[in-house]
Length: 198
Image 1 (cartoon, rainbow, N blue to C red):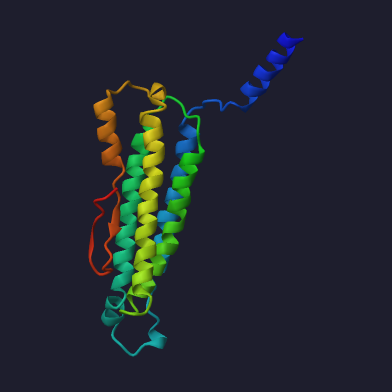
Image 2 (cartoon, rainbow, N blue to C red; image 1 turned 180 degrees about the horizontal axis):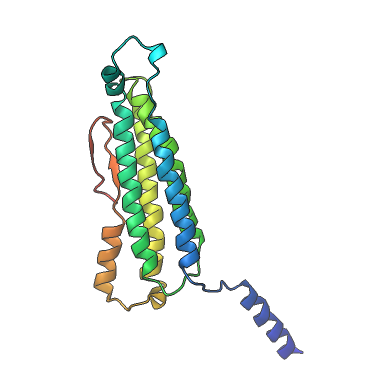
């Protein structure tokens, strides 16, 4: 009787266990989310309406510089994440945990909103929500850096046995540090620099 109960317990535990799978489907889904997010960024750059302005086209395009700056920053950020994500997944023979990857994709999916928010409020000048918009954008960049570092650390250390090629500890630490850095704005919205603290 005890033996039968033990067998049943083992069967239930095996059913709950996450079965490793090929990483191709994870990579394809992630690429799709990233591709949509990076495409949505450009929708915030508007074509000036000639019927609603008395200024020259060059002037109307020039006043949209905050949208251009926010777009460039977010495009570079998503591009860096995409390159590092491919490298991260490419090191694996198989994958077993998907929730950490989904958290990263959640942050990437919200980035077009934060980009639009930043570009819109940079046009308003000081005292019009500019600082809050920049803080939200910076916070999202930091969160995205953390959600990228989490699965990367998970792959390189607790799940190192699932790597396709065995790597020494020193090299894994170097990969983790290099891959966790993203671009983000400073507290002063008009100036941009690499974020050094992630």
